[in-house]
Image 1 (cartoon, one colour):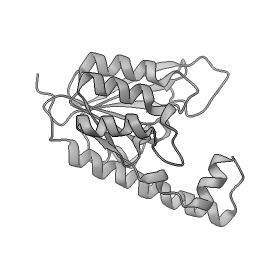
Image 2: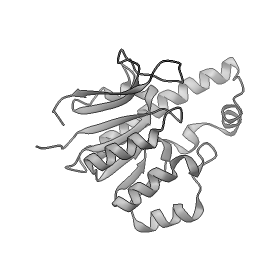
Image 3: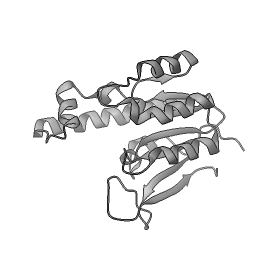
Length: 195
Protein backbone atom coordinates (compact mmCIF):
# COMPACT_ATOMS: atom_id res chain seq x y z
CA UNK A 1 0.00 0.00 0.00
CA UNK A 2 1.33 3.46 -0.89
CA UNK A 3 1.54 5.75 2.12
CA UNK A 4 2.97 8.76 0.26
CA UNK A 5 1.37 12.07 1.31
CA UNK A 6 -0.09 10.50 4.43
CA UNK A 7 0.17 11.94 7.92
CA UNK A 8 -0.56 10.41 11.30
CA UNK A 9 -1.43 13.18 13.76
CA UNK A 10 -1.11 12.59 17.50
CA UNK A 11 -2.83 15.10 19.78
CA UNK A 12 -0.52 16.10 22.62
CA UNK A 13 -2.17 16.99 25.93
CA UNK A 14 0.88 18.91 27.19
CA UNK A 15 1.08 16.64 30.19
CA UNK A 16 -2.35 15.76 31.55
CA UNK A 17 -2.04 12.27 30.00
CA UNK A 18 1.10 10.21 29.42
CA UNK A 19 1.62 11.64 25.93
CA UNK A 20 4.92 9.89 25.32
CA UNK A 21 3.40 6.46 25.90
CA UNK A 22 1.00 7.02 22.96
CA UNK A 23 3.72 8.67 20.82
CA UNK A 24 6.05 5.70 21.37
CA UNK A 25 3.30 3.21 20.50
CA UNK A 26 2.51 5.01 17.22
CA UNK A 27 6.16 5.56 16.24
CA UNK A 28 7.01 1.91 16.88
CA UNK A 29 3.94 0.77 14.94
CA UNK A 30 4.59 2.86 11.79
CA UNK A 31 8.38 3.30 11.97
CA UNK A 32 8.35 6.67 10.17
CA UNK A 33 11.32 8.32 8.52
CA UNK A 34 10.16 11.70 9.88
CA UNK A 35 8.43 12.86 13.05
CA UNK A 36 7.27 16.48 12.95
CA UNK A 37 6.79 17.96 16.42
CA UNK A 38 5.42 21.27 17.65
CA UNK A 39 7.31 20.84 20.94
CA UNK A 40 10.71 20.94 19.18
CA UNK A 41 9.82 24.49 18.09
CA UNK A 42 12.37 25.38 15.36
CA UNK A 43 14.96 22.64 16.09
CA UNK A 44 15.70 19.96 13.48
CA UNK A 45 17.42 16.73 14.46
CA UNK A 46 18.36 15.12 11.16
CA UNK A 47 21.90 13.87 11.80
CA UNK A 48 23.92 12.12 14.48
CA UNK A 49 25.69 15.42 15.13
CA UNK A 50 22.34 17.21 15.67
CA UNK A 51 21.31 14.55 18.20
CA UNK A 52 24.67 14.69 20.00
CA UNK A 53 24.51 18.49 20.22
CA UNK A 54 21.02 18.54 21.75
CA UNK A 55 21.90 15.72 24.16
CA UNK A 56 24.92 17.75 25.28
CA UNK A 57 23.24 21.18 25.49
CA UNK A 58 19.90 19.89 26.86
CA UNK A 59 18.38 23.20 25.70
CA UNK A 60 15.23 23.74 23.66
CA UNK A 61 14.05 27.25 24.57
CA UNK A 62 12.64 29.49 27.29
CA UNK A 63 9.18 27.97 26.69
CA UNK A 64 10.12 24.28 26.41
CA UNK A 65 12.34 22.47 28.87
CA UNK A 66 14.47 19.60 27.60
CA UNK A 67 12.78 17.22 30.05
CA UNK A 68 9.45 17.60 28.19
CA UNK A 69 10.90 16.24 24.92
CA UNK A 70 13.77 14.10 26.23
CA UNK A 71 11.98 10.74 25.78
CA UNK A 72 10.83 11.62 22.25
CA UNK A 73 14.33 12.77 21.29
CA UNK A 74 15.92 9.58 22.67
CA UNK A 75 13.37 7.32 20.93
CA UNK A 76 13.82 9.02 17.55
CA UNK A 77 17.62 9.00 17.95
CA UNK A 78 17.71 5.26 18.73
CA UNK A 79 15.41 4.48 15.79
CA UNK A 80 17.27 6.73 13.32
CA UNK A 81 14.23 8.95 12.75
CA UNK A 82 14.56 12.57 11.65
CA UNK A 83 12.83 14.72 14.29
CA UNK A 84 11.73 18.09 12.92
CA UNK A 85 10.44 21.10 14.83
CA UNK A 86 7.51 22.74 13.03
CA UNK A 87 6.93 25.85 15.12
CA UNK A 88 8.67 29.14 15.96
CA UNK A 89 11.34 29.49 18.65
CA UNK A 90 9.52 30.14 21.95
CA UNK A 91 6.31 29.54 19.94
CA UNK A 92 6.66 33.07 18.56
CA UNK A 93 6.08 34.78 21.92
CA UNK A 94 8.15 37.81 22.92
CA UNK A 95 9.81 37.95 26.37
CA UNK A 96 6.85 39.72 27.98
CA UNK A 97 4.35 37.09 26.77
CA UNK A 98 6.74 34.25 27.64
CA UNK A 99 6.92 35.58 31.21
CA UNK A 100 3.12 35.88 31.49
CA UNK A 101 2.50 32.39 30.05
CA UNK A 102 5.20 30.67 32.13
CA UNK A 103 3.96 32.34 35.32
CA UNK A 104 0.29 31.78 34.37
CA UNK A 105 -0.49 35.48 34.67
CA UNK A 106 -3.65 36.90 33.10
CA UNK A 107 -2.73 38.76 29.88
CA UNK A 108 -4.22 42.18 29.16
CA UNK A 109 -6.83 42.57 26.42
CA UNK A 110 -4.13 43.87 24.07
CA UNK A 111 -1.88 40.91 24.93
CA UNK A 112 -4.75 38.47 24.33
CA UNK A 113 -5.18 39.95 20.85
CA UNK A 114 -1.45 39.55 20.24
CA UNK A 115 -1.57 35.92 21.44
CA UNK A 116 -4.51 35.18 19.10
CA UNK A 117 -2.56 36.67 16.19
CA UNK A 118 0.50 34.54 17.06
CA UNK A 119 -1.66 31.39 17.26
CA UNK A 120 -2.83 32.02 13.67
CA UNK A 121 0.78 32.57 12.55
CA UNK A 122 1.80 29.34 14.29
CA UNK A 123 -0.93 27.30 12.59
CA UNK A 124 0.13 28.77 9.23
CA UNK A 125 3.71 27.69 10.03
CA UNK A 126 2.50 24.18 10.91
CA UNK A 127 0.64 23.99 7.58
CA UNK A 128 3.70 25.22 5.65
CA UNK A 129 5.88 22.57 7.30
CA UNK A 130 3.36 19.81 6.52
CA UNK A 131 3.38 20.85 2.86
CA UNK A 132 7.19 20.96 2.88
CA UNK A 133 7.54 17.42 4.23
CA UNK A 134 4.54 15.63 2.71
CA UNK A 135 6.46 14.28 -0.32
CA UNK A 136 9.74 13.57 1.46
CA UNK A 137 8.97 9.98 2.46
CA UNK A 138 7.10 6.94 1.19
CA UNK A 139 6.34 6.09 4.82
CA UNK A 140 3.62 7.88 6.78
CA UNK A 141 4.86 10.99 8.58
CA UNK A 142 4.00 11.24 12.28
CA UNK A 143 2.98 14.75 13.39
CA UNK A 144 2.74 15.63 17.09
CA UNK A 145 0.70 18.75 17.81
CA UNK A 146 -1.23 20.06 20.78
CA UNK A 147 -4.69 18.47 20.67
CA UNK A 148 -6.31 21.91 20.26
CA UNK A 149 -4.67 22.22 16.82
CA UNK A 150 -6.54 19.05 15.74
CA UNK A 151 -9.98 20.55 16.41
CA UNK A 152 -12.73 20.50 13.77
CA UNK A 153 -12.21 23.31 11.30
CA UNK A 154 -8.50 23.65 12.04
CA UNK A 155 -6.70 25.29 9.08
CA UNK A 156 -4.04 22.59 9.32
CA UNK A 157 -6.32 20.15 7.47
CA UNK A 158 -7.35 22.57 4.71
CA UNK A 159 -5.03 21.12 2.04
CA UNK A 160 -4.80 17.55 3.36
CA UNK A 161 -6.95 14.67 2.19
CA UNK A 162 -5.15 11.62 3.54
CA UNK A 163 -4.47 11.42 7.26
CA UNK A 164 -5.17 9.64 10.51
CA UNK A 165 -5.97 11.48 13.75
CA UNK A 166 -5.13 9.97 17.13
CA UNK A 167 -6.42 12.20 19.91
CA UNK A 168 -7.50 12.25 23.57
CA UNK A 169 -11.26 11.89 23.79
CA UNK A 170 -14.22 11.32 26.11
CA UNK A 171 -16.51 8.29 25.85
CA UNK A 172 -18.62 10.08 23.19
CA UNK A 173 -15.52 10.50 21.01
CA UNK A 174 -15.20 14.26 21.53
CA UNK A 175 -11.66 15.63 21.49
CA UNK A 176 -10.40 16.73 24.93
CA UNK A 177 -8.25 19.88 25.17
CA UNK A 178 -7.75 20.22 28.93
CA UNK A 179 -7.88 18.19 32.14
CA UNK A 180 -11.35 16.93 33.02
CA UNK A 181 -13.11 14.63 35.47
CA UNK A 182 -14.40 12.60 32.51
CA UNK A 183 -12.76 9.31 31.62
CA UNK A 184 -10.26 10.02 28.85
CA UNK A 185 -9.10 7.50 26.26
CA UNK A 186 -7.58 7.73 22.78
CA UNK A 187 -9.76 7.87 19.66
CA UNK A 188 -8.81 7.51 16.01
CA UNK A 189 -10.32 8.95 12.84
CA UNK A 190 -9.19 8.44 9.28
CA UNK A 191 -9.61 10.65 6.22
CA UNK A 192 -8.56 9.19 2.87
CA UNK A 193 -6.70 5.88 2.51
CA UNK A 194 -6.85 3.16 5.14
CA UNK A 195 -3.81 2.56 7.32
